View: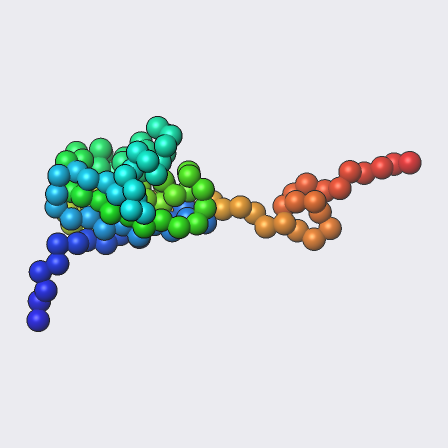
Length: 132
């Protein structure tokens, strides 16, 4: 039995952030955790990063975006939303794959915080050496 579901899902991750993104045909609404994007991402840099896949594919007014984001900080969350939107757009229209790939929007940024090592003050910083 085929179900006519208007939603397309995409999952994005960055640092400690996880974004579950749903897209459906609409007028360009953008809701993140029940709030508008401007309210949730107050900085211009975070808002631009989150919208970048829609801008690259020229579909800002074509889809409504609904995101649930948890973990991490502002930068990680906005970039996780960006990856989730890119994956959902690729699923909806495979022709956008090349545009998204050119702009580096389909690559998962694997950089994360390095763990603290024993015998050190941080991941790489040692304790201050005293000669006398």
